[in-house]
Every structure is written in C-alpha cells, then in structure tokens.
Image (cartoon, rainbow, N blue to C red; front, side):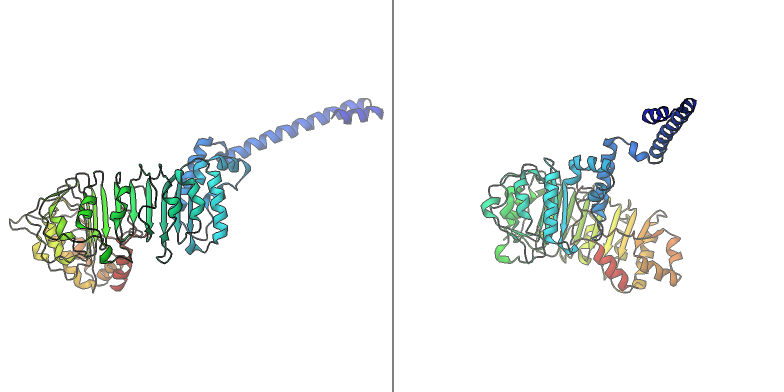
Length: 475
C-alpha cells in the first residue's frame, strides 16, 4: 500500500492522496477480516480438521478394519484413499505405521502380481519397524519379499488352491526366527518337516492342512487355538499315530481345538483311561475318522462351553455313563442322527442348540429322560434346518415347543421355511407357544473360536452351505 501512496504523492495528489490512503487501509482491513472469517467458517463446517492426531489415527485404523471385513475386489484400499484426501491427512497417514502394517493380496480379485508386488514393497517400507499382518490367497511369488521381515511377522495367513501349495524354501526357512509370530494359517499347504521357523515363542493360533500334523509339534508348545483341516493329499501311510493324537490333546494351554478329516490312526486296543483337558473351552470335530468314539467318551473337560460335531455316524457310541459337561452352553449337531440322542443326556446346561440336517429325526418321544425330567431346561434358542420337505418338519417344532413349555423360547430357521409355514397357515400355532425368528443374514460366517480376534477363513463348518442349499431346496 505504501508504494501506491508514494505514486500518488509524486503526481501531486495532496489531500486526495490522504483520502485514497484511508480507503486503501480500510479495504485491506476488510480483506484481512474476510479471510479470517472465511477460515473460521471453513474450519467450523469441517470439524474433523480440528480433531487431535491421535483421534484421527484411531478413525483411520477403524476404517481399515471395517474394509478388511467387508472387502470387495473393485474397492480401493482404504489406507490409500485416506492418504490421498489432503496434504494434512497424507502426512498423518504416512507417519501412522499401523496403517501400512496390514497387507492383503487375493489373486482371485484379478490383481496383477507385479502391481501387488510393488504395493507390498511400499507397505513394507512405510510400516518401518511395526509388526506385520499378512494375508495371501493363491500366491507364492511374493513370499520371498516378506522373508527379510520375518522377525516382524505377527499374523501370517496363506490360502492356496491346492495345486501350488508347497512352500519349499529349505535353505532359508530353516534359519529364520519369528519371535513375534502369533497367528499362522496355512491351507492347504505342505511344509517340509524341519524347514519352517526355528523360534516361535509367541505362536498361539495355528491352522494347518497337513497329512501328518505330528511333524510340526515343535510349533505347538504355546498353542491355545489349534485347527487341523482335511488335506486333499492325506493317505493312511502318512497318518500320525494314536500317541501323536494324545500328545496334541495333552497340550497344556490348548483352549480351542478343531479337527476335520483323518489325520491319526485309531489305537490298536480300546482306550480306557481319562483324557484330561483342563483348559479346553471350544471343541469341533468333523468327518468320521474312527477317532471320536475312542477319545470323546473319556474326555474330561470341565470348562467346555462350545461343542460342534459334523458328519459323525457313531451308531453304538454309549455316553450315558460318562460325566456331563455342566459348563457347555452351545451345542451344534450337523448330520449326526445317531449321536444326537446320546449327547442330549450329557449336555444339561445348553442354552443355544443348533440342529442341521438330522433327517430322519425320530427322537420326539426321547425329549424326556427315564425319570421324567425335561432335558435342556435352560434352553433359550433352537436353530434348526432340515433336508427334505420342510412342511413335514413343522410337527417337530410344534412338539418341541409344547414340551419345552417356555413362551420365551426362540425357534429360528431359514426364511424360506417360515414363508412356507405362513402360506399354510400353520405358523400361528407355533407362535402361540414360542417366538419364531428368521436366521439372521450373514450368520453363516461364524468365527472360530467364539470371541477370538482372528480373521474369518474358509471353513469346513461354515453354515453357509446348509443355509443356502438346504433352505433354498425346501422352497
């Protein structure tokens, strides 16, 4: 403004110069005031810009967690979106190591391996010293990029297609140490014995699809969650021994055990001594493998809360004389018609009962024991889906509700069955005795074990197959 005043003075403006100066100062003041008001108004209308950095980082982390749960292939990665909003957010995001410590790659999304490999290298650099959570599906080529960072592995999940499933890095993996590895999931995969990770003191969660799990016992010392899945290459010549199986059951910290398929040979003589698992809370067992009848009648698990059984055709299994599981609250029985009656007598405290495909169901008259006492007196929710014509199963639900005599009992089944009952004007009879609900959408993905902070994976026990196929077939 002084330069403009000097120019006016040289031209001999005099009094006009002073007037012009006052006007210019007034205009400058008005401009500055307007800029301040604009800035204040802009900040006021976007309050997120005033949040402390710590709060913003928590929001970023929550958004990333949500995107990983509901990942859709065409959606960009949320951490990338956050880092491109504005300069302020980008600066915070690039300095927030946690945001870049989780990497996911799924070849089924159509991602180019080269592009994803470049993205992996960026994430490894930006995460600096932070522990890593790595999830790969149908991949092997990028594994080598992560090996120099194996000391930072916290979670490592790899799901192959079964054709490219052998991890053979014997020259390097046998020398690697993973002191921070807590969660390891490989399926289906073959780890050559003695070639993977020497030191895993923090490993507490292990899922593996392997024909002989006993080869990897050195990984199990601190395991609390163990999931052994069916392996497509398993054969009897590579099965573990009965003693190997007992060694797994004897793991001192094991609280959740899930076994599918045939991995161990049955004992040469009938087992007769108690199998004590003091910390076991959740047990799943699937597919007939000749072991269930040898260990379950002798299992002592005073803390057992959840029991899930699938495809077990034990005709002659006698469980009447064994001690009940008094702490067991959730019981799921899938395709085990002959075992079901025996289980009823040893699970008196069940509050949530799920019955899937128990056809033929001929146990209506068995709901009362020999003394006339009602079984499952604490039951709150019955979830049931049956193969075949749903209308013929309505009598089971009706009789069940009548015998339970609890108006607060909730009976859940798939929407198609409920619609068919409604069309037949039968549902009112059932609603007069209990509450009828549809199975919630999305409940087919049930995390295992209950309450565990681990990603939901492809699961043999997932209810999706039964909900979709059996429910739709009943329409």
